[in-house]
Each structure stands twice: as structure tokens, then as C-alpha cells.
Image 1 (cartoon, rainbow, N blue to C red):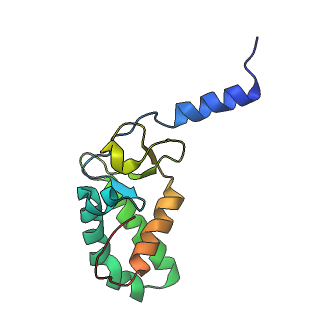
Image 2 (cartoon, rainbow, N blue to C red; image 1 turned 45 degrees about the vertical axis):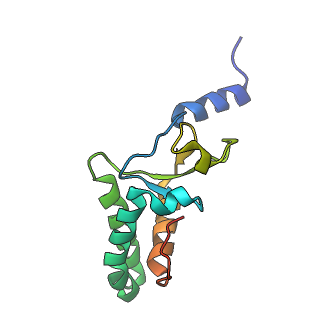
Length: 132
């Protein structure tokens, strides 16, 4: 008997999405959890964003996307490659309590990563800089 389309779709989604992700040192964690603010990947990401902010703010619209993509590529070209992660909405736990536990994080797609990077580039300097 052939699998139903909903079972097949769920199986395909599970195949595309890793079931457990442990954030690495080059990963950028999106979210409001305190882990995101203190994670080494986020600290490095903020430094990269800060170094490109003036160029981004002065750039024409078509060049802004190039700057955003260059930041994404810079993170992805690290060794090991950095990823852009967010807390898994299907995980019924708290990212702060998992201490980078398995299955708490998922990779975001490039469009979402680009939107977030652009947001950080447009953000004004705050007293306490956080990525989340």
C-alpha cells in the first residue's frame, strides 16, 4: 500500500530538515534567548555586521542586497561553515534550558537569513548589542 500524501509529505520534510542540530562556534543563532546574545558565533556576526554597517547605509538599494549576501557567504565560508539557526518551533522545550541541546535548532532559509542580516545592518547602535 502506497503512503498517503500527508505521510509522504511529512517524510519528505523530515528528510530535508536535520532532526538534531547542535550549534557550532561559527553558527549565528536567531531568537531572543540569552544564549543568542552570548554565543561566540553571534559575537563574531555582530563584529562583521558592524564592519559593513556604514557601507550598507550609504549604498544604493541594489548594492545593499550584495552586502547582505556577502555577510551570509562570509559566515558560510568559515571552517567549519557557519549556519543561521533559529529555535525549532516544533521543539517543546526552552532553548535556554537545553544548553545547545539536540533538536532545539533548525537552519533558516537564505531569504530569512538575508532579512535578519538586513535588519541588523539597519539597526541603530544600542547600549547592549544583541542578536536575536
